[in-house]
Length: 458
Image (cartoon, rainbow, N blue to C red):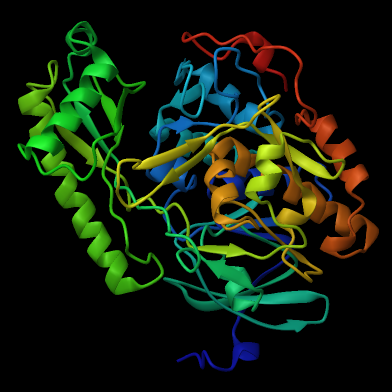
């Protein structure tokens, strides 16, 4: 029996230069960026049995690569492009242009994406461990931070010189006692959503009957008349890469805390309940869905925000709405503020970025306040509620990971702390990888039929 309270006696699973905790889209890209020059040992640890996080557990569309509106601009590049390139090679993507909402989406096959993440991580020589949970961060051992994990092999520790927290909930930062804001403390936390997929949909009949506009009218009527107990008047259902299949973002579970296990359990059950309310609604009310049925739900309920770590800098609504790109920015965002609230007439509040429609995110937003050897990426990065509602798209979280992975190796090169990394040197490295760091002055070529050649830069 291992004495788990005596952490120093726990077996050492690994010593590594860079440890990434969480293999979501942000974490995977962080590990890939850190391993680019093959100079340092990189390890990534994930609590589920497959990589991808939100990108493979819940969703099938990357948003944030393009700005919304009638003239889309491409604002993300580098390793995120390489991920989409791999999906494109097997015809597992298509673009969904639109003139509103979050902009053009890159819709993909999430099952193929699991394998793409696997392959890219393995090809990069990264040590990869699944089904492994972070349970504690203990006192440093020399130049290493000691992270305690549990899996079916028991309790073990990983010693790491640099750590990137991509856990989604800021678990490493929490155990390291970095300050954070808990969603819901100041403004209402965004609702949670169980996504689901349906097959045997006659998409042509659906489009001929009015498509998205008709669906919104049917949902609003169902709520107002009480014919179906839908949780919201608005929601989306879009076609998937798989033929005659659709994916949804419609379920709405508000006012529950995802970090409290009894409430998260309640949310999971409520989310599943709502999916079958929607199935009945679609079958009975929406042309083209008469013979459709649910074929799958998200691996877990989708959580939009929990902990948001306080960083050396903090992205605010004012910074987003300024439409400015500061000199210390490490990636761009053109996504509007998309705030999923509890109720009222405005179920989702949209606010678009003025002027160029693009803003830059400062490096300090991914560095926990006072951190020497760690970074935070994904939906737990340093931002206010409103700013987070804009900058949480997966193209942006992948961009955070790209910057953090390069920053971690740069800090090892220069033997400096996370907050001391020379940002201009980091920007030069990001530029070499193909990241977009300045607001583009021309529209992107967007076609439904695939990933255009001008986006396939290596």
